[in-house]
Image (cartoon, rainbow, N blue to C red; front, side, top):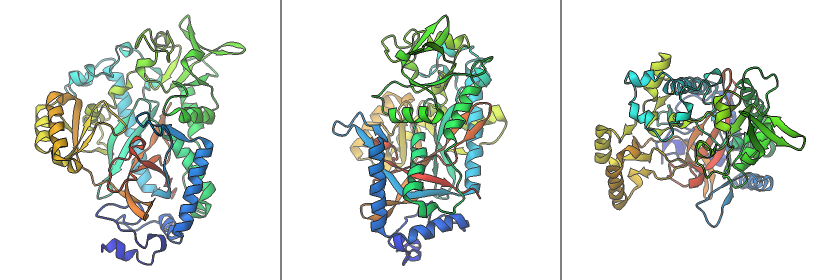
Length: 488
């Protein structure tokens, strides 16, 4: 029996909770917990397991009733799903959050400077800090953005930085999401649900609020509207009801108090964007687009797209409308470019990274490929163009046949892969069928940038609900937790 388990004896809800040799966000933090965190521990310990299950069932029923779902296109039996929600919160202390917040703000500054540079002077490429082919040959590099000045130099208005914690509790950056990061609606809805159905757990705690997100995002999008517009019209452009994140599109439009539109609702005339309304055409100045580059404008990208707006890129290049995020930002969240982010931060900011990367080997480079092939059974290998946990290999969990198959893929297309060591991800107590058990978690803080960068306190904590799994993505069976940031 572990020391952790012995210490938890007679601890009510945690009496049988056993943590392997991982950093536990709540019960095995290897430090003296602040009063607020100790309060959460004590209150949870007094819960009866049956009562906790009753409240968890009530939460799930509420999510179904409110239609808080996401779509899994690969599942023929259950396309629309409620994101599994765990009622045991993940708690961050004020110093921990200060470290995360500063690190995310630093990273967003560097990403915006990097994007401006690669679409203008390309100094970082000439100076050999990052291989030119990795950027200019990247599938997400957009020629239409070359020489285009965006308002305030902001390319990434909404950013999601995926963080994990290692065995010692250090925060590490797993990847950047600089195109259309999703999941913030769950952060806001999860908090409302916790305060409604678990009020006795949060009462009296000084928690950082999350309900500012909608107004903050609207303000930022208004700040980056074209110059000379006193009362800019902001809209949210959605692919439509069949999109996996459509619930979030509706939710965010409501939170910001702006119209939710599809491509057919917009038109471009004389280089300006208008929204069709019953009262006639209305000018549009800022577009929060949840539509990938390829579908945005059939005159520039995919000519078969029925989701975009013909002429939108021309209006954008003329400076008559702002797109958030900017076109071509996918270069910055490419998994191979990610490996260079520490160098990018030093190059543009002359600072050491506050949040460090997970060690990464680029298989497009001979030494990276050789190392990966020689150590495949010990590494996580990811395709650079995939997301959602698809197409990756977790070496220690793979069969011999799977390892050999992946070796063939690596040799055939090394530029499509990176590899990283398996990180002993932190765990958090989670309500499971057999009781409260340790499950691995990550964290996605959301940053909003207008004239300055604001980071939503906490972010989306995703939890791998399958025992032993390191994959937290909702599309792969993961769930979510409410993330509490102690204000002091």
